[in-house]
Length: 505
Image 1: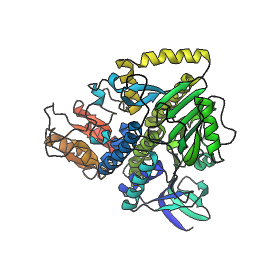
Image 2: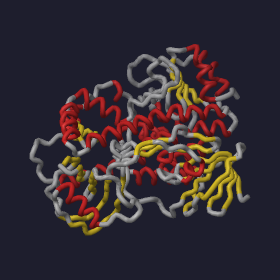
Image 3: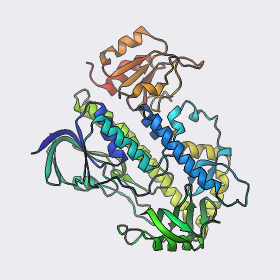
Image 4: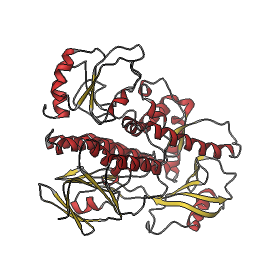
């Protein structure tokens, strides 16, 4: 046996890197192994949602998010500046769509309480998957996380006490193995997880290309008699959706000819593609494991759930898994919490995944080209072009409605903590950089401090008040930014501390 680790993470994409960073921040000895020798440059997700931005912001990454976001806006600005003059009055997109039906900013009720106190990180969401992966790779290096590329996990044995992992002939003995190795996960298959769901019925193609012939096509998402196409939002980015079944082969490289043919079938416009910078095929294969844990094997990201990319939820769903799992697994490894804490991982994340699967399935139904589906699409388009519907769908897609059921009747418990400015010049999110929990106590109550004192090594006490006039309220907040207790339930503070932070020191 060559080496020992607390955790082996299979996969060095954004999910695996985020999980490894969370574990290392909590003092866990983690190793990441990745089959690819270089980061995957294939065009994928183009934006992140609010919970993902907030999670990165809590770990002190707002400056990197801001710089990358501004660069992305500059790229989009160049494309929109050169776009053909639209035939209808221009409306500002809300940054989201449903089944390719554009949602418009003038329909969004910005005063809705769900959009309040999201914090500075929530402003920086036009970040593609490669950017997020690069940010997390730098953070992993700063934290000292070893990431071994060109190493393929070929097998493992979970003996109930630990996991012996075969990494291409190199054996690692670990306490836990987490599969973050994508939709075709080797870890999931070898561990025997069930993966029920629906077979695909579409072929999607997304690419970043250099081309001519599309200069007069409108930007954004558009429906045609034969499918759906997208032009933009950055120069050379195209996407087509055809509802004639899944591709015969998803492994061969996507060629310029294949993209030209698909584009012509969907748009009726013949383009010439001189360079394929990046291209991929995708389907609406929709599956989810019933339980994200099996013994000492856990899954996160696409290894646990796959779906079509519509709504841009895949990357976000995986980052949410990693942020939820990391601090819990670390608490178990360090002996602070029982293994039962890991049961809350599936209990909290599975419903969010199931929601995403349902919403992607619904979007496929609205993309079909038969007369009944097109009639339904027309009705849905009309309904979505209203303030109430647009606001609700934008709230769902941006993730601001995410809530875990923690067994409390308080509506704030189970949601992301409000991120408002504090009287000491910080914001609430600034106090999570070290991965601790936080007791936000603007009343500076000796009684509250006494109740959490046994967990002083895991809970940071912040007594600064809000910088804006508001009713002071004490909050106990988990390391992942989720509110676990409010002062509306004073007698539950010690129980909440014990549940989420383990045995007292």
